[in-house]
Amino acid sequence: MKNDKNIALKRLVRSYLSSVISISLVLLLIASVCFIGANAKIISDYLKENTVLSVILQQDIEEDEAKDLAGRIGNMPFVREAEYISKERGQEEMKKLLGEDFLDVFEASPIPISIDVKLCSEWFSKDSIQVASRMFSEMGEVREVSYQESLVDALNSNLESIGVGVAIVTALLLFISMVLIGNTVRLHIHSRRFSIHTMRLVGAKRSFIRRPFLRQAAVQGAVAGLIADGAFATILHFLHREIGDTFGLFDNNLIIAIFAVVLATGIVICALTAAVMVSRMADISKDDLYI
Image (cartoon, rainbow, N blue to C red; front, side, top):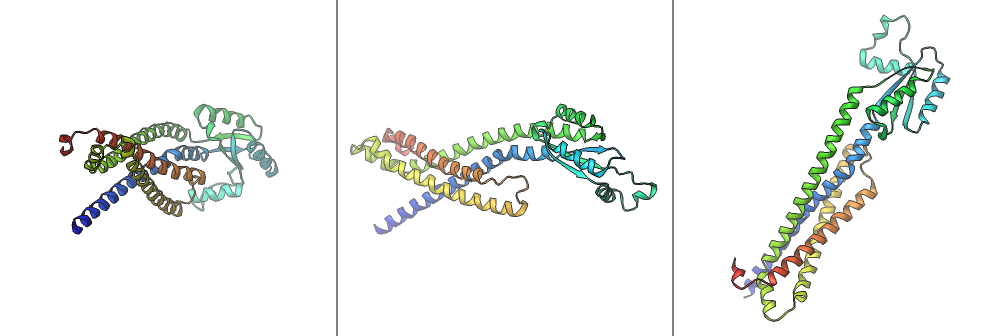
């Protein structure tokens, strides 16, 4: 008799642990999807705001005038950053591209003073960039404005497509995750259908039967959520160590919100599924118990 109890207890513990681990893995997937979805715009804005427009100045402009112009451009409301590029720095950059002796064919250095301009992400469209370029070109100190138009077009079209794709995949994965968690809890409660039926036979009310299962499901969801949060925090730690905060991905408020969402999702889905499943099991006939 004692051995039978031990075997039953071991089976119950195994079933509980397998359910918790399964739910934890699904919640970890939800955390990852939320993280990617929430940071999609941050990555998009980062790429847009780091595309450079080169404002090339007149050959005879003085250094002080160029720095003053860089300051004026940087104060424009649609400009995120304007960086002054001296002739010497321009020459060093060209040497890296063309080799040390590229200036030997010139009598004087052809490298002008320039200003690298980065626009705000809201201005990263073909029409807006053309407007900004025209405004810069109308300044007397500016000789020309150059940027990679093909890169702008490619980024705009690709980022839009990627954004739609991420939204669809996120919605699909979240739906699948909910179904998987629901099935895991449903299977766990279905294995205890005989206990539920016995409680109904002795006259227990449905609310009385449901209460311990709801409590157990909520605890199960909370434990699974905490495990998923711990695993997700570990992944973020290694990710941060490898790439740093390059894109501004690791916003503390956002990460805390994801932790809270994962924990709440585990508790709510497990409890709701348990409530529905226990109500169904309470009404099941004796013959259907063996199906």
